[in-house]
Amino acid sequence: MSRGAMQHVELDEAGVPVPTRQPRARRRGTGWWVVGTALVVVAVLVATQAVLDARERAVAERLAATPGVVRSLGADVGVLWRPDPAATAVIVQRIDVDGAVLGLAVADDGSQAFVSLDQRTGRQRFSTPLLDPDPARARSLDRTAAGTCVAVPVDEGSPDQAACLVSDGFVQYGDEGVETRKPATTTRVVVLDTRDGHVVADTSVPGATALAALRGLAVVAVPGRDGQTEVTGRDLFTGEVRWRFSPPLPGADRRVFAGEVQLFAVDGLVGVTIPGWTATVLSSSGEVLRESRPGDADHLLDPVAGRLVLLSTTGSGALLSTLVERGRADVDVPGEVLPLTVDDGSVPDLVLTSSGNVRGWDAATGESRWTSDVVASVNALLLDGRVYVSTRAGVAALDGRTGDLLWRASTAGSTVPGFVATDGRQLVTTEQPVGGGNISDLAAFALDDGRTLWRVAFPDNLWSSAAVGHLLIGWGRDGRLVVLG
Image (cartoon, rainbow, N blue to C red; front, top):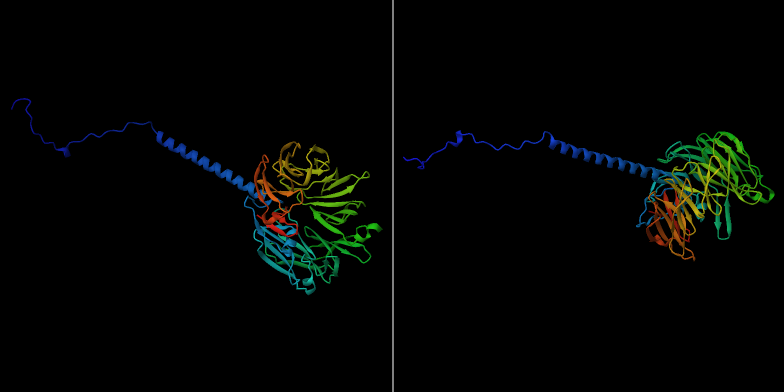
C-alpha cells in the first residue's frame, strides 16, 4: 500500500476522553456582589418607603385626632346623613369618642337617653334610657334636651366618661315667644361610660340648670327664689358637696339675667358668668382666682388652647381680651381673640386677635409677636407653622412665627368665604353669594400655595358650613343640618 492511500479506521469513542470547553475564568465573587448590592438597594428602598409610610400614617393619625380637623374630603363630597332635631342636639354637645358623637337626646315620645351616633353614618351605636316618656314634652315642638352632657376631662386620649345633667323641665317656644314653661320635678347628674353607655353614677341635684365637669368633680348651678344662684362643686360619683359659691347679683337693670348663670370648665378651671355682666374664675377647690368685674362683656371658652378668655371693654370703649390659664398670671391683649379652631401646636403660645387686622401675641407674656394687614372675617387655623384665615375676599396663609403673608386665594366672583375648615390636606370653605342668592359652592385650596384644588356646587343646595368636632356640617337657610363627607 502506497503512502497517502486512504484507510478505513474505526474509533472507539466511548474509550477516548473528549476534551470539554472550559469557561472563561471570572473575577472571584463579582456576580454575587452585583446581586447582593441590588438586594441591599431594594431592601433600603423598601425600608425607606416603610419609614415614609409609617410617618405619613403617623401624621394622618395625629391630624385625625387633632380637634377641629374634619374627615377626608374630595370633589365628590356629598351628604353622608341628615340629623333629625334630636341628633342635632347630640352633635352640638361636642362629645367625640372613637368615631362617634355622644350626648343627651329627646325622642318623639318625650323620653330622654344618652346616645352614641356613628359620625359617618348617623347609625345609633347604643342608647341608655335616662328619663321615661313625657306626653307634655312629646307635644312640644322643642326636641332639644332640657339638660346637656359634657365630657369628663382626662389626661390623654378620648374621654371614657361623660356627665349629663338630666331634667324633666322644659320650655316650649312658639312663634310668638315662650308659650309653656314646665318646671323640673327631677334633676340629676348621671355619669356614663362613653364606650358602651353603662351608668357609672347617678345623683340627685334638685333645681340644677347648668353643669360643668372637672376630673372627679361636677359643678352645678341652682337658681334661688330670691334671684341668687348657688354654685356647688360636688363629688362626681357620690354627689357630696365639697364647696359652695354664690356669684354677685347683677345691677337692677340686669337683674332679669340673674338666673341665667352659665358654667364652663377647661384645664382645671371653672368659669361662672352672668352673660353681659360678670365673670368669676374658680379653682377646682372652689377658690376664687379672679374676682368678678362688672361690665365683662362676654367670655370665650377655648378648649383647643385650653384656656378661658374673658372679654371686657376699657374706659375708652376698646375691647380687651383677658387670657386665663392655670398656673399663669392673667394676660391682657387688646382686641377680641380670634379663635384657632385647629391648633397642632407647631407655634407654641400663639394667640391671635382681630381688631381691623390680625395680630399675633405671646399667650404667656402678652407681648406682641407680629402684626398683619390681613383682615379676618370668621376663624383661623394653625397647621405646620402656618396660620390660615378666612377673609372677606378669600383665604390667606401667614407665617405663624413672623406674620408674613405667604399667599392669598380669592373666592369666586361675587362671593364671600365662610368658616374655613381642613382635613389636614387642604382648606375647605363655602363660597356664599354676596347678593343673598340661595346657591353656594364648596371650594378647596392647597395648603402650600393656595391654588384651587376643586370647586363644586354645594350639595343639596345648602348655604354654609362649619366644622363641629371632626364633622363638617352644612346647613340651609331653613336651618336644617346635614353631615358632609
